[in-house]
Image 1 (cartoon, rainbow, N blue to C red):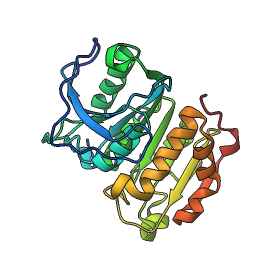
Image 2 (spheres, rainbow, N blue to C red; image 1 turned 45 degrees about the vertical axis):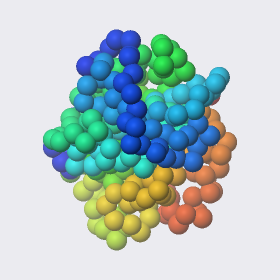
Image 3 (spheres, rainbow, N blue to C red; image 1 turned 60 degrees about the vertical axis):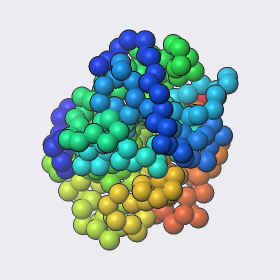
Length: 271
């Protein structure tokens, strides 16, 4: 199934890591932090965020990320992605650090291909590529939705993004979806145009809104409240984490989210 979007928007091989940028201080409050970023010669035009501490026996699910405006600067959402990495995830952003230009949905698919090819090898021995979340902001969210039919992807995150036409597309989504629209003052007016008003078939979704502008709090420390929603969704769906579930079922109230869920009680997280 295809749909049009709000904006128009090197694969396998054993990885040999390039050095982490020495100017980084890293970030994130997770147990494996700080999260830092690097590049890989085997995955050109991408930025890979990783925990700086070993995760020991803890396996690492994967987040692949698309930036707002389909920006090719892989540091566009550094606050969020360092936070995700600090909890034991490789977070792969389309676009290299400081790169100019635009990304495409294929670049996100390249991230998935690379993660699958390199999981369990060398520096990525603890990566579990059977647990992948594809997510993105604005135009990057459209790139993430393009991965919804990839069987290797477990869940999708749609952040301040949506559909302009083919507004029934969301009813055919075939896996759990996190929606964080963001712009509350325009949310009800734009809801139908985004094509996300109807629940996504029989598959679980969590749709949260707070009174912030486009992009919400992604630029705040650790991604702010948007970062908390994205992290807790990943933790619950990909790790069956009890704290993640607690935030999604009740803890979000303290952050002021207005939440609608669909079939959430039917969600079967990956242990």
